[in-house]
Picture 1 (cartoon, rainbow, N blue to C red):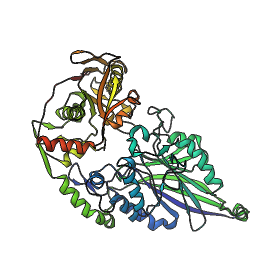
Picture 2 (picture 1 turned 180 degrees about the vertical axis):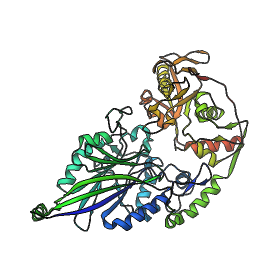
Picture 3 (picture 1 turned 90 degrees about the vertical axis):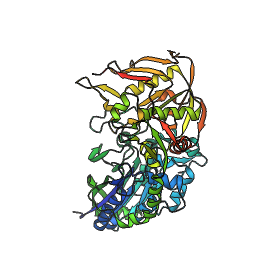
Length: 542
């Protein structure tokens, strides 16, 4: 009987850190149980256990999303990128290119890559000129001391051109991740002789993991389910993008995991392998490292909230953080009237002065007579009596720019119907939020509120029939007439399922980041006034 040897390896993963390093809440202004400095402590502990039998892969979206990330990209980029230095210090084996990596432009991303002590992986982002992987090697090979060969293939959601500014992705081509994996996974198995194939995909799941039923419109933004079902030879699928917490899940024999956001969890996949000595001997005569096979898999999420922040992660960020705090607290203006948001639910049911102000600023700076915007986050506080950059970034967390599109009245009606799907009637007759906007992750940013038109949404009616009144300047909006509407670049590209806007003529584009635009506007006006004209209503509930 041939002898069999067993060994174990661990694959660790973070995803969607979004520049949150410090255990600090920029919104609350106090300590937080999140942040990569805590997660790094868990990584260090795992490394002490596993040694060279461990890989740590960051699964993307680490360069954007926090005031710290914004400050380094837009205010003071003279020093080392602290998100990169943190990943370096944590011994990151590889990082996947996420969609938000492009938000500050290609030059910023390439400089971050230059500072990285690890490779950036994305097999499906290609150079349009050469057709080769745009950011170097598409995959990573790691050999353990006992001869286990692990391959990590990086993939990125191909939906990026829908959201991103064209100049931020110039010269790049995004190909389908599933088709790309069908090419590369057999290559890793056969040419690279990988015993274990890990696919690190900055994307999530488009279908329920148990039933296979669609959980969102199948746009191609999230293709994790298809990767598991259609690509043979994957042992582990690391996912992200949706900010979900998925552990101990199997899909078509593939072990899948997703570790939340902002350093909430460290994902850990433990693989047990068995070596068939007879197969190993035969393989070695062919110059290949075959013989190991995976016999058990287990994925779990390790909470970072109780881990002590790691000093060697905190210390390099201290100087940048001090500059950031000073910048955040610099007063730039004042309010006249109440613009504080105390109930985000009510602010989406009944027009709030803060939302009206955002829309009116967009109209004023763009020249458009119609505008739409969203309340992006459940923790958006609005403005108090005095306004600082901290207040702006707490409300407007995405580095969007503005576009003016020429659309028809029919497009506007369809967009309002799409937004109206955000609501549902609860059993008690109260207006609630549709599960489609809560799962697999909350999407408050996909409910728009409009200015420059008068409308009524009746959520007691079926979806697609909820716009019961739609006027402009007191007259019905004409289906075939054209109107110029200002919106953020995400929505203008059709993001969030607003396909009616995709490909529409761009009348004007404002290249300045929205947070900067709002700050400049407040500095110029010094005092902004709270007002509400009640141009829209949501009805149908108790």
